[in-house]
Image 1 (cartoon, rainbow, N blue to C red):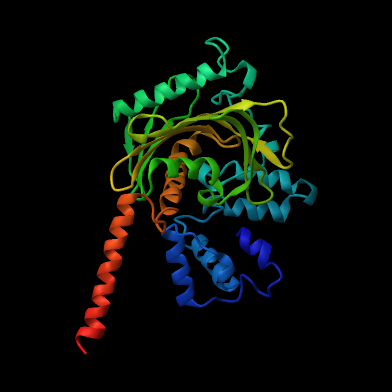
Image 2: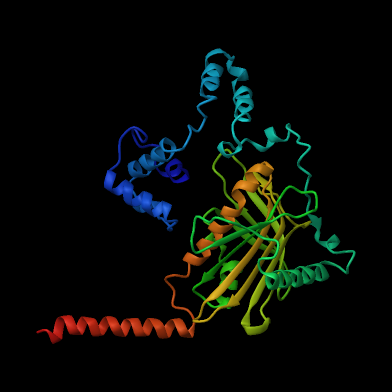
Length: 361
């Protein structure tokens, strides 16, 4: 939809003229397989037709069968200067998975079930145990302990991707947000995966709008700010985090620990809302043949959404990120074992070609 808005708004009959069925089916298969798609290679009418198919095949109408008549009546009988607020009120009656409503409107709808979350100032983080270094060291130790306990206390969730496992655990701190765990095998050694997560988010996060290091605190610690784009008129999501990492674990394993902080030098990003990362942890361990096992724990207040949305959807978003990281390495030759295997495959292809094209002659 964003690509259509930027590149096809001036096309005549963009949602009226049909695309080509065969091309639409290929495009749809690529989308459903979560492949990286360069839409500039697509025909705009094919993309628009695929969007129409998506809405047409939803289990229920987007405005819901129950409330469609309500929206029609608003346009028929409510004065124009009251329509926007009336529509927003009607939107709140819909099931949560159907809606996004503006932040300023949600601010008027205070909910007693949502406990407000706030990030601490960097200078105050871990003040009771010796400062932010001690706090992050404790988080690293807890991550390693959690990894050793494996499935203890975790509830498995059916994943849409057979290559990514999803689990959740309830946290008894008064916040209605589960801790999510996702894991997958990656076709790269731990050091490469660490670099991809720290320095190449643009490769695996298609909605990344901007990213920069605000402060380098030491060799393996920094304050990092990144912004994820949203479809207009919704605000972008901004995250200011402290992150530390270790690369000296046994067997060349690595880890990353991230948590939201308030930092005085942050310049507010226009049209954005600040999300809160309560916990983000990555453990990357070697698992042979130049591969790694990536474990990710995540608990994030994305702001502007209800706990119900979070419980239903956030785990799948974590799995999608992990699948993107996984897919980003498929075409790379990484690790000594991988190079040997690919050399063997190349030799087999050459021998097969020689056999088919030379020996028979």
